[in-house]
Image (cartoon, rainbow, N blue to C red; front, side):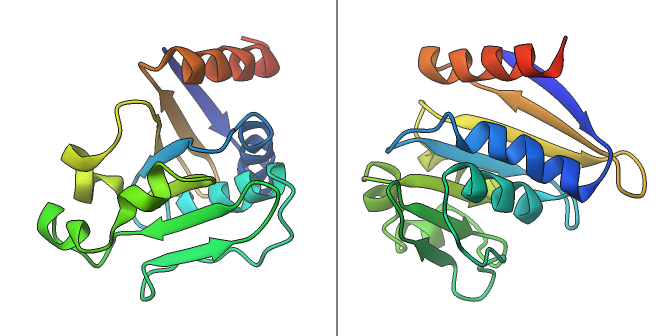
Length: 156
């Protein structure tokens, strides 16, 4: 299943993130792809709000992982500074990805071969000053149902 959404501002990106976050369950993994400044962390802020987390969300570039407690915990991972699967392996991300929370991985291309099959891939692309294109994909039946519900939200 695939869905493309255009957002017109950071606030719009956050609103879509909220819609996604409200539909997530423990154990869900979101793999984020996109260039610097594409809106990965902005989208993560929205997802956190959708999970009803009152958290200061910023990119964990130097710490690699931020854990945010809540009814459903959020594990926010940023792999920008890593070069590949060998370095990622030492982080022990499996504990997060198959745990009790939602795991969001920025720069997921750094660990493509280690990502779970059951996940939501979101590619963010800059299409103008504040305009972003979000491409959501999943082969998972449950995640595809989320994408279908988001498609209904978009009026497509």
